[in-house]
Image (cartoon, rainbow, N blue to C red):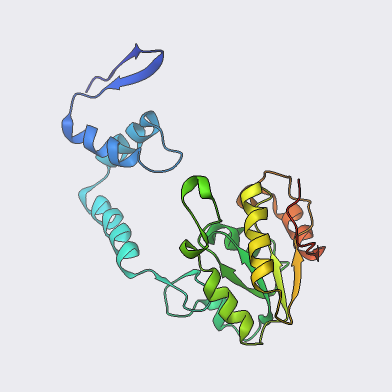
Length: 218
């Protein structure tokens, strides 16, 4: 099979002599960070695999999509109604780390520095993207705080304007409750994302967290 690359409008395109491969490339390139050339390499590699290997690959994706659950307490992904972290008797349920995304949970867990539990918002407030408080799990977080079982909220959101706006909104919503508000130390660069921060820096940011000032830093 011969694949011909050519230039058009200053961008590299690939002429794929098969509509079936083209359809596979379209689907693979819809994933974040996967360009069409990378998608083509993936498609051709899958084409070389045995049919039973492809069946297992496809089945694992289908099973994940159909059976994955979101923890009813913290909204992290889980195989069960309550995730392993929330269900663990060795985690401190009085300290909750508030994060935007499940990838942030994975990043913090990778440091081995945090022994509390989490609350996954499912994003951050971003009017430009049409994401308001009602699209996030902020109300569920407020309910957890209102129960009186939580003594500290650690705001571990990205050091961006949207992240700071979300932290400020949450701080206002829980201001009437007896809960300590802290934020991770700014070893995490302004504008940076937690999932791309190295484990040592992120671990220190959790360990050296500071009282939340209650405003949007500029």
